[in-house]
Amino acid sequence: MFPEVVVQNDSNVPHPTVPNDVHVLLSTVPPRFLTGLRYVRLTATTGFTRGQRRAKTPSRGRKVAFVHTAGLYFREQQNHPATIDLHLDKIFRGTPSWALRLSIIRRVTLAETLFHELGHHIHATSAPEHREPEDVAERWERRLFRRFMRQQYWYLMPLVYTLLLFSRVVRKMFRHMPRRLTKKPVQA
Image (tube, rainbow, N blue to C red; front, side):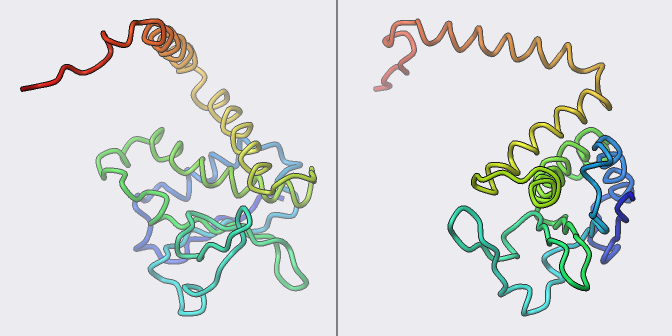
């Protein structure tokens, strides 16, 4: 069953096609990993109640306030289905409004948080591991993001590989360069 994308407050959506972008991202995920996930809620931390603003979630041995997160995963419990909350104000913070018109920028920005939270769901339901949950979620985030890029933007992959190769060559050049050539000159 495909998860339902629910917009909590329309005024919080930075671009009208964001719910559709979430559908596109979820369509690249194998269906077996979406089993049990009922909702993906698009919210903003500005609409949190007092209790939600004070609530905390564990992360790498620390407690992090809900309002400081870009997204949250809630496991399935007795009367509540598994849900992912995406905090759009945190996800798109710092992204210029002109950039939001480009679907690739919107989707790549959303993908990081959505796939991370989906990694928590996969860890809880399909592929449990005895490691730090954040590490497992980050590993799934990378795997799902690569799959998304290969399926949706396959034509950009030669450019990406070329840029990666170029950056490695440049890094190697500067690593072997004498220090006095890389040091900034002192101005008098």
